[in-house]
Image (cartoon, rainbow, N blue to C red; front, side, top):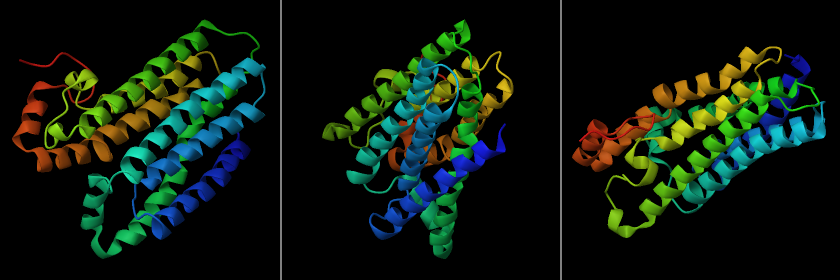
Length: 260
């Protein structure tokens, strides 16, 4: 892995995250701006890789589009639904309460930490960009199919949840519609599927194993750190027994038929 490329990614990611921190601190005190910053930063990296990497033009365009569509769609969704038209996410309110007087310092470090996250998650892109072949391989085409499933599934899950929440009759209820009938967190599942696309596309490319960073780190974060644990703790606090029943009958992550 080229150290100069990694330094370039970091030189882009740090200003993006400092900018979103200023937006959080000066305009809207909503820590979900860190998620928007991560998405924007990663999307810009994807475009930059597409513009500067070697290889045939169609490869570069597709690689840039894969990262940019994923990132900018998610950035718009988070900004529109969790910042512009909503109060701060319960997960961040929980952290604010937990950190107490240290909250502002901790959130500043959290925002800067997202710059490192952009660097880590750019590695799969940089590995795939190292394939300068002029022809499309079967693995690359299969990777694009995996990408469609991942981004399409995550987009559908977000749409279904947002539609459910906008209905006043569903206040306090648990969403069991569409993909949410088969998984308690289908958006997280398909996010990991998206990162698997780079693993498939990199087969046969030098340092292909580095693309495993994407699905491994993302699934670890979602399953054990900032994703499911915090989301479910807050869901139980707000929905109580209804959500506990949802936990008993519905897969936490991988979509599967509900019990009973």
